[in-house]
Amino acid sequence: MNSKYEEVLRVLEDCVKACNNCFDACLKEDVKMMADCILLDRECAESCTYTIQAITRNSPFTVQILKLCANICEKCAEECGKHDHDHCQKCAVACRKCTEACRKVAA
Image 1: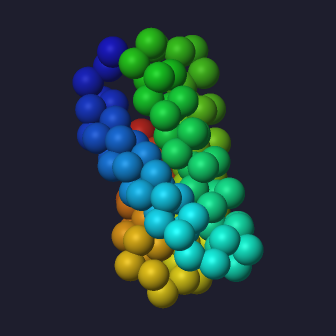
Image 2: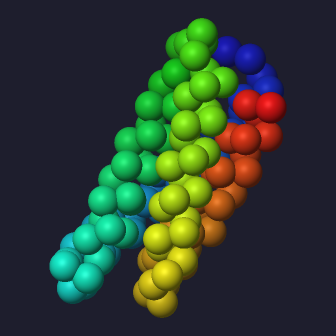
């Protein structure tokens, strides 16, 4: 594995944790109101997990996967940012960092 991915791997892992925490906490809120947040938390966590796997197995599609992951993280950050819950705000921050890190390493 290329050492240029060390930082993005850490950021991806942090994003997975934040999305999973937000997902779990949103399920304890008004689920109907939080439906989009819950959906994007799952999409984002799964995308970040897949991206970690792609990087660590030296996938020939790593750059494309990083770009897709950045787009999904960006959407999750936008949705989570709409909600005042602490877990949503923390998730939005983690997703924004992940968006930036993925785009930087994919450039």
